[in-house]
Each structure stands twice: as C-alpha cells, then as structure tokens.
Length: 130
Image 1 (cartoon, rainbow, N blue to C red):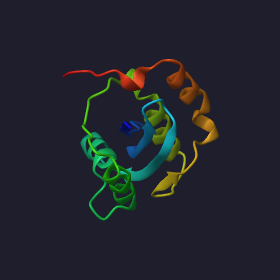
Image 2 (image 1 turned 45 degrees about the vertical axis):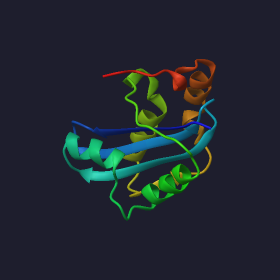
Image 3 (image 1 turned 90 degrees about the vertical axis):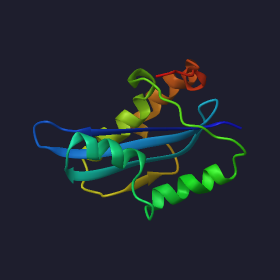
Image 4 (image 1 turned 30 degrees about the vertical axis):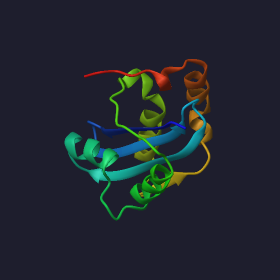
C-alpha cells in the first residue's frame, strides 16, 4: 500500500497570521487523516516548516509516524501546487479558527468537492522531480 502526505503552509498578507494544513491518503485517494493548525503571526518559512515538521512531540507527527510504521517502504516526493489543493484548503480553514491543532479523522465537508476531483484524476500517483 502506498500512502501520500500532502502538506502546505500559508501566511495571510493582510494580518500576518499563518496556518498549516495537510492530508494523508492511500494511493487511490482514500482519506486516512487530515489536519490544520492556526500558527498565529509568523513568517512564510516558519509556516511551511511547521506544516512539514510540527515538532517531535506534536500529536500529529506521532499519528503520522504510527501510520508510516505499518508501511514497508515510503519516500518523500515533491508535488506541484495544483495537486496539493486539499492541504491548501485545510490550511485556509485554520485561518478562520483560533484552534491551535485540529485533526480530521473524516474529511470536512468544505473539501469534499476537491477530494472528488482528486480521485477522478489520478494525480496522487504522479511523480515529479525537482
């Protein structure tokens, strides 16, 4: 089984508030886990790093490590923004909330159309080189 983790970070230019978001899915696009996190004021670099790392004691990172522990083989692959729309939508949802970390065991209604588009186009299995 192949598992995909898409992450993204954003800083809203008007307020300086930042958020991160991500989604973990199986190879055919089936939802495993999603998250978003309001970060407060920080730089774009910090928002992007937070979306990927989150810190070793972070419950999200522990959950992802649990998922990966069951996988025999995994790798990190760059994907362009066009194939990262679900993570992008989750991070933007965090800007509307003051909740520090929110994990989604089921996909939020706000991104169901994006997930349908993703599953109709097999962009999850495309590999891009930098």
